[in-house]
Amino acid sequence: MDTPTNVTIKGILGILMSNIDEEKKKRVISLGMGDPTAYSCFTTTHVVQDTVVENLESQKFNGYAPTVGLPQTRKAISEYLSMNLPYQLSPDDVYITAGCTQAIEVAISILAKPNANILVPKPGFPIYELCAAFRNVEIRHFDLLPDKGWEVDLEAVDALTDENTVAIVIINPGNPCGNVYSYQHLKKIAETAKKHKILVIADEVYGHLAFGENPFVPMGVFGSMVPVLTLGSLSKRWLVPGWRLGWFVTTDPNGFFKNTKNVQRLKKYFDICGGPATFIQAAVPRILEDTKEVFFTRTLGILKQTSDICLKKIKEIPCLSCPQKPQGAMAMMAKLNVSLLKDISDDIDFCFKLAKEESVILLPGLTVGLKDWVRITFAAEPSSLEEALDRVKSFYQRHSYQQKVQIDL
Image: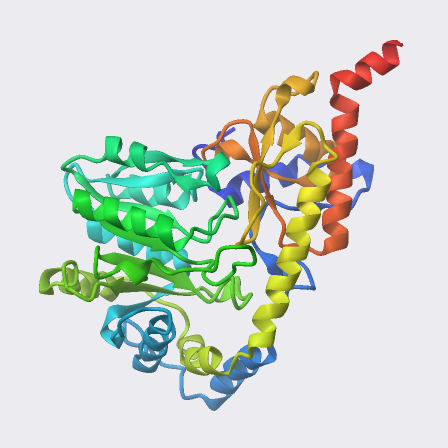
């Protein structure tokens, strides 16, 4: 069997699902995949659906789109992102991708060169490692500090960077940690990148999904200090991950990265890879303009509620602890204390036995770079979340040393 370090998140979740004991007849509750649409409380707004249907029925968008994306789509996204920046993006800064995953692949492909390395957070999103392996780009991991709100260990970044370092990846709001970085911390990151003359890959697929103390600040705010490649999508904020509508954006007002050579490389790359469906691209302008704020407010309210449920329930499970309250995104990391469990060896063993015995799916921390942690997705129905974590509590009680002592007594 492959280990979690060399399979995708979907792959390891598939293995966990296959380990469920169907004879127990418990309904499966998955808190492993970051797809909120699995639960009925997370549905997109009518304007999103209606616009796509209208475009499809119009038969105006059955042909190919330009490889870099429809002009009106690029323009709408440039205006949408510019609302939170101190300068105006151009439609030419925007390239439409098949979700944020393709945007990641574009970023790494464009930066690939002999001996290049990219700095990536640990814990983080494993797609970066998979994409880099295909392009022979070295990945160097810097730690996120759980006791400091999962901030970047900037001293580690300094130590890891050398003459072959081309970029640092910043995921904000954070997947898998649920952190939202402050303006001050993002500025320090930008200053560090500038010092080392590297650019920033800003993974903002969870952009604006912030419900805690820190508001969402796009990394592009610091584009005048250091070139920023902004990656994003409709997937999470509009609750349509299956539509695969994302973007790769050069937030680089001084043109340090956006030179003729790099622009030509980008266009050539998009000439050989397909983007999202034309009729979905055509819906983007109206989606961005007409979505009501109440839709976003409702989503944030549910995520705040479910993250609070997670924290409360985890406090009832002695083998799990959460160092920081989630402030955004849709998942959090919980530390697993295996010393309290009499027959669990590590986070992988914990998640496999939990799936088999309780039909609850959590993601082993090793999958995202942290041994003896688990990732819990809180983008779920509140009642399902409570039931799942109650089952985790029952699992702990069965496997704890304390239970053994009680039986002996």
